[in-house]
Image (cartoon, rainbow, N blue to C red; front, side, top):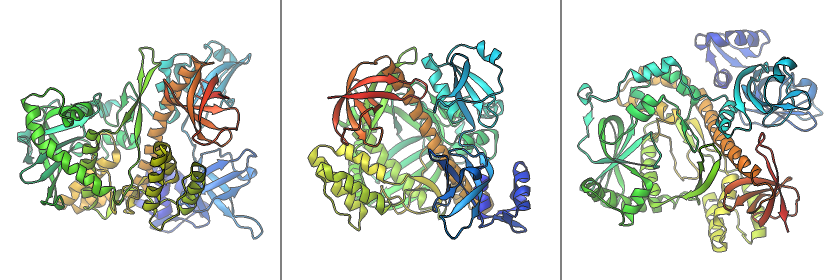
Length: 636
């Protein structure tokens, strides 16, 4: 829906209107919200945006164009709720702030609602996120047959039960809840599975007229649990040529085919600690598209040539076939880089080029961070027991092997961005000055006093330098990140602020990101000079990038929700326990993050007498398994 409405605001030809939306278009024409003959465009009197509602029931419409909010009086909401996507008509008044009236509810904030059954004493359905009561047509007699805390997936428009997910007391229901909240699914359609399986289990390279690079000693470097290998690398030391090979997913996923229709609605793979929910059927994501060890695979390969001073002098995109000689984990490569670990003949052969490449990437990184930012990054990794409960949490920091792969991927992404002027870019806009000034004020209590420079990157680096001296850089980095705007996909290039790149895109993960798959199709149309296909891909690209950006945020929220559910179950089993924590937010209620045997869980505090980044002891007082909220009290 949002993708189509974005097209309407920019203009859409009548012949391009999908039949599914024709009734909506006819109504908008009738009320004169759409203007034009051959090309229809939303009138300037109408605004498309998202509704927010305050505690008094007053609405605020945030236009999707990024312009100022419009006030929506309660009687003008027309049934819209917080987060709903609407079309509103401007209400002009000389004596008050700009207002609007909701005309059409286009899309609920969530297509589905997750609810659980409570007995109070009669059976009641409550929203699992807000605990608000949900009115439903289901008869009391039917509900009484179900167990306490039964969990349901409901249609957000009708409140009818779509699926019974399980029981809240069972930890294994958490993944179903997290997926259902954002209307995600694990299963693929039969058509998509049949299409994926039709490509078989192995590649016959004689069937393809491509550059054969199977003789080169490519390798993959990924997390030890990875099953989908998007990228492989090889470095020709003598000629100083880096090969970055990326799985050629577009060769298998046809535009508008059965797999593609599912992939464009998933947008991204979702990763839980114990499993993944892939964007593509596993027959592709874990087999034919994955750059598996000792298997011939189709790839799009950037061939990047350096001079003796490590400057890039040539970038070439190839359609090729590779054969990865080793599947490495980050841990194994870190051992090799530290001159440790057992090695066989293949390892020794690969290290003849991997070690020189590592030295090159160190140089590239040092050069890169002169113009961009580098943040302290640690990633929480959960381990679950056989019952789906939290067993332990580990913090994984970036290591040399991560840095090696990251800089190779950045080079490929930058090279891809140079090939397009319009299409799909990864954009990170410059932070707003008001947000930077607010950050500078928040830092003063820590003894960090920095002036706002014209060069904002320099401002942030000055902050980081002082924070490092005070031993609080990892916390201050998170504050800097919060100050920045969210990275997103756009059809036009606008640079990447944090990386310090003039042009940037995502090329290296087509198995798990639809953005990269779209870019692959575009690049292949360019190198084959297929103007007709290029035009077809670009026809609706502006609305597509909006959709992909939204799907990215949804995928992240699914993962965060799952983690919160595991933390809540652990806290519920540890009520009364005193833990070490650090205050990360002082707004009411203040929030602290546990830094103890379990790391990363948020605790909402009862009292306000805390300071930002203060290290405190907190007693776990109360937990809601449904909403995932953990409440605690600071121990003086």
